[in-house]
Length: 230
Image (cartoon, rainbow, N blue to C red; front, side, top):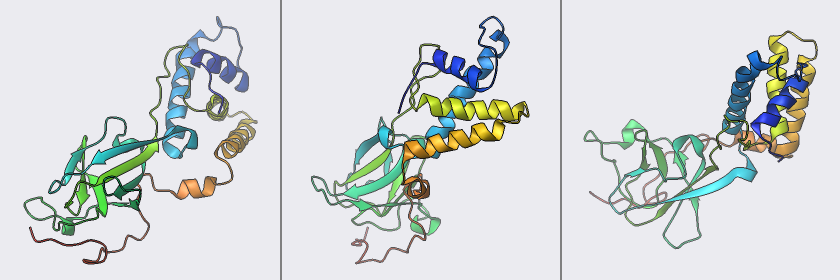
């Protein structure tokens, strides 16, 4: 993954879109190009799981507590996988996303208490809920992308591959201008994306951004968790 400064990316974008490289002639489009490059990187960062940017965040469970703040390095929008394990254990169990109303009592507490944690869900902008309410001090581990670095000043450096960002941004500018080579530029961008993500791109695209499991089964007491009367 080859990163570059925003200033260089703007120059390269002008070349890809067939614009003049003269700074004096391109001033009226400068801020638009910077915005398109910044937004393109954000869209690509959100859309795919980037192996180079993988990071982990652990949240320690407390017996009897079912709502927790997100870790300082892993917000909701960055989570790609979610796992649970007992403290000091290396045996991780993947947990699904989605706590439905039949799993929450009328007083907003969980319907069941027991180990292991099976599911998690959004509780607020800064907190998440786990289900069932844990009995022990286990660990919930979120895996996702590292945050994007700022990309607004000329000296700012891209987090993702600079060529990839420029190609996708160039394809957008050419499409806006109804240029004949817009589709060719889009194809180049797609090929470069495939090269970066490798042969497992299909599998990566199928990974839920929230660590959810397809066709989530109904958890079975005594098998999926050990129930406890509150």
